[in-house]
Length: 233
Image (cartoon, helix red, strand yellow):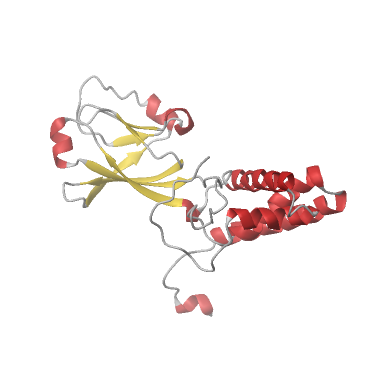
């Protein structure tokens, strides 16, 4: 899976690129200079990315602007979509004037929304993004509705993309530098299962499990810009 690199801000500390990470992984089984080991290391790093994508992370919160089309009930969401967070109704000045309410797919289907005529959508769902990447409104927006509220700001949780080129960094993938140790140790474990010994497999597994726990603890830590004095008493 290639990585489309656009404008982004880079978090510190700076991170090594994919080529360097592969060497760190392959070196665990004395293969940092062997092309076949490096290829396996790259596959192992992307396996670590797949593991990351089994969970929703706050730092994978993304936004995109969706354009509504009159008499069209569905809108295609981003390719990296995983789960929805909110959908804001925007006016012609791109100002938030309200929210569309999310319904889980089964509730949405059980509501039996009739789409035989256009109107004012209030609810939306995403049935199965892996199948069609479609966000579906309760009713198709009418021409009048679109004239007043032509776009929507979609906040969602994304999937992390795979490394592709040797120059790809965590910043290019728009994820925090804290992931580096987990990715490396998970990849070392994965590689050791085919290239290493039992001790290397066990040591790497213990390391990535600990890194995973640290990432989860950090991700679930309360985020706020103010804490009451009472919290320190």
